[in-house]
Length: 238
Image 1 (cartoon, rainbow, N blue to C red):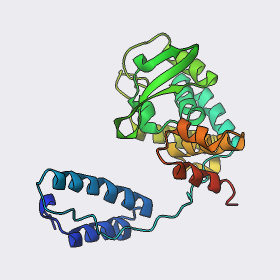
Image 2 (cartoon, rainbow, N blue to C red):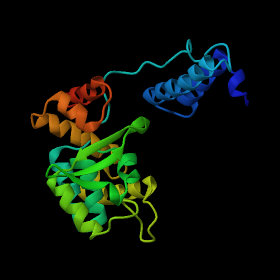
Image 3 (cartoon, rainbow, N blue to C red):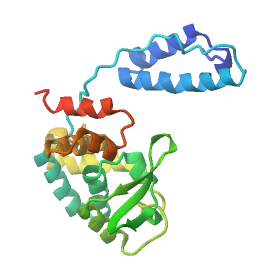
Image 4 (cartoon, rainbow, N blue to C red):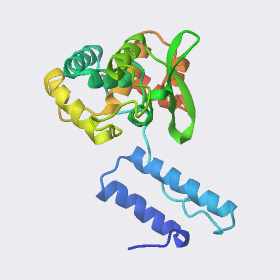
């Protein structure tokens, strides 16, 4: 059933949320995020006097646990994946290091341009766009910087990660590459590995190495420290 968004009621929102979870199989955290995003749209509409009330305000929201269920990659698995990426090619190696050693979201890495690379106070940095359009300057790990320079070969324009035709590399291509690498490097995760596992590994291994929760939160671009703590607790689940 199609409903005009501006005519939707709480009942419509509840039905949509149940459909996402029970029929589409979306995780509770995903459903909760979608409800939050839609609620923001309706709050704006209320503030602009387009509608009288926000139908999402009192909608039932799924309970989201405080722990993340993913365990990412351990140190040995990540090392094996990086070796496989190095053997696969310059672009693959640079991309895996950006995700694993700097913890970027896949959208942040693929959205960057070669011109976003810079040097600031002696450090190689990458300027990216975070969630919500926020700009951030990321100091690159030395290995990441070296791999990017080797891959770009002096190129300073166009997408940071591009295809052979010069187009921007897309997320499906990255998923396929990671699964292909995992088939030999981390066989147990060959069918499940995804880009967020590398980001997860960055957070958990940084915490294991003794970095403070606040520093890791800043590096990962988590707006809420509770998000980082979810990864912290996941280290001890087993």
